[in-house]
Length: 289
Image (tube, helix red, strand yellow):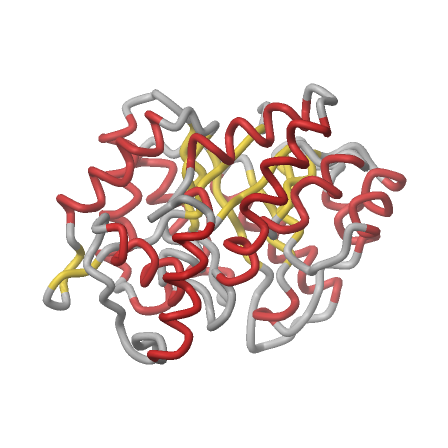
């Protein structure tokens, strides 16, 4: 399975406590118009911890239905319980997802052997291509590069999303094995591509899918001068979309543009007014507003 380009880590819009399906469909259409390579529903950015299993599965199913083959769908269907991850991934496969994004089991802090068995079991029990998701800042433990290399022997392990803030890990992974690496941090997309990554699972592309697609396309073609111009223009946005915990700022920004109602589910809540002012100015300075 070829994974390359921009994959948008979709927000889940809410209105009056329920999923706002109209806004969600409009968001998906904007992604297709922006020529992204794929979309990633119900990952971290989609507030997956606050969705019920029924909502989680419905978001994936509706994504597949609306996208209708126009780009790839990588369903966020990971969990810190292997059985739950298998259940959600089976449902994602039944809905027609192209692959699954599997986060490192969080909170229970498994050993590397446990991590290896977890991902291997999900793949074996579901048959859906797996994108490993290394995000130690949220999960509490990393996927060691040696564990990634070990997992890569399984043909269902098609890629790894690197969200640990380390460009060096891209080189370490590619030195150990042959697996696609995708950046998990918008601000590190270009340096990661420069050492072998093939794209980005992006938060910012909720707002600027076309611009991000053009930047990544230029970088993948070796035109780093063009890509760097775009990176410098949007770097303040990449930075300030993490001024508070993701996805609080990106939903606030999308509220400012009128794309969605900036509504959250507890324990997430609205931004502070001071941070909202910083974000609004960033959007204006970058030409998004």
